[in-house]
Amino acid sequence: MLTGTEELIVHFRECDGDTLRLPFHIELEETASWDRSRTWVLTPASGDRLELRHDHREPDGTPSERTMYGGFTETPGTPERQDFVSVERTEESGFPRGWRIEVVPGERYTYGTTRRGEWSWRIDFDLSRPVPVPPAPWGH
Image 1 (cartoon, one colour):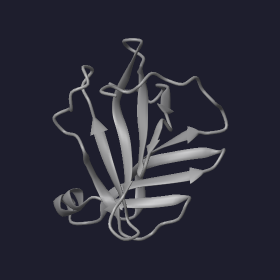
Image 2: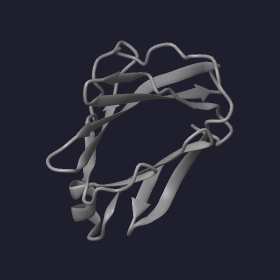
Image 3: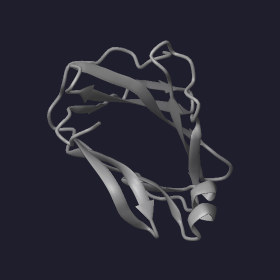
């Protein structure tokens, strides 16, 4: 169970052609280990849209039962902000749901979920303070 005091690291690890992979590492305080199961995958979609997928892995590298879910931008967005809509999550709830990514270069990277266009949950990563490069995420 997460307490909100864990160390969280986003690693701008891989940009291969048109694919950007950002592993998300979570320090598990109770076991003094790291959860390296999540990677955000960003790719171009049709037209000027982008696609966000959540690649979830087990410690042995195999795909988790729930993996590669995500959504698409509905507008071009900006270099600083992209909003992704989840058709599946929107249909379940009846109102727009998805994810948002914001970047303020050299200052912060923000990722979170949105509901009706507003943040419902978010994480702010401090880009002004370099950290040691973490190991590869599970499965990579």
